[in-house]
Length: 327
Image 1: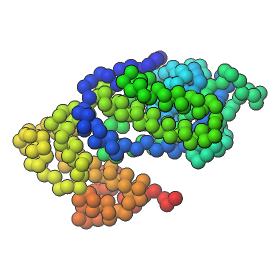
Image 2 (image 1 turned 30 degrees about the vertical axis):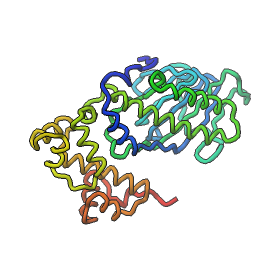
Image 3 (image 1 turned 180 degrees about the vertical axis):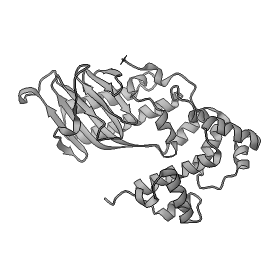
Image 4 (image 1 turned 90 degrees about the horizontal axis):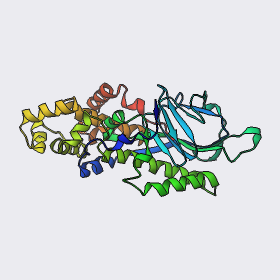
C-alpha cells in the first residue's frame, strides 16, 4: 500500500465540544527523550522501533524520504513533512521504497547537546548536496487521563493534514528546516523544542477535528451530555462520585445514564473512574515522584493499602515498582 497524504485523518467526524477538548488537553505532555539530526547519502535505510517502544517523531528537512511500516504501508515524505507515530512500533525511513534498513541504534551519534546527537553517513566522508536531512525524536507521550485516546490514534499522523486549518504551523516547519540545514549556534536545543510543539499540535488537531474515524470512548466526548460527565470526572478524580451525581451531570435518570455510559465507553462509571485514577497515579508517582501516600489521598483513598491494591489490579505492578529513579 502506498499512502501519499492520508487526508482523511483529521476531517471525517464531528469534533468534541471545544471547551472539553481544551480541558482534557491541559494534561498532555510530549517529552523528547532522544533526538537525532541525521544526514545520509542515498541509498540508505534506517530502522526504528526495536529498541525504542515509545512515540516517534520525524521531520524531513531535505527529502524525499519514504516511511515504511512493518505491515508494508509506505508514506512518501518530502521537504517540510513531519509525522508522529504515537505508539511507535517498527518502521523505517528509506531513500527509496523496498530498500533494506539498518537499525538506527547501530549508528554512532555524536552529542550536540543534552539528549540530541548527530548521525552523519556520507559517501567517501564528504557530504553532498543530494544528501537527505532528517530530525528524529523518540518521545514519552503522556496524555494522563486521556490515555484511551492513544490506542485510538492512527499509526501515522501527518502534519500536512493540519496546514489548511492551522497555517501557523508552517513557519515552525520552515524554522526546523533552516535550523537542521544551517546548524547555527544552539540549533540542537531549538530543534528539540520545535519538535515537541509540532508533535503536540498534530495531536491537538486530530482531537479538535473529531478524532478521525475513532469510535468507542471518543463517542463519549462527542456526546454533549456524556462529555459533561467525562469532564467532571477528569476535573475531580478524587471525589467520591455516586451514580446519582453523575446522572445529574448528564441530566438523566440513573438507569439511563448507567446504560448509556456502558454502551459508549464499554465500562461502568465505577471502572472508568478507577482506571482514570490509576493512570493519573502512575503519572504522578512514576514521572513526578509524588509520594504514594500523597497520590492515594489526592485520589480519594483513605487507606494506602486499599490504593495499592487497586493500583496493582489496574496497572499490574505495585506503586513503588513504577517510581522513576532519582536523577
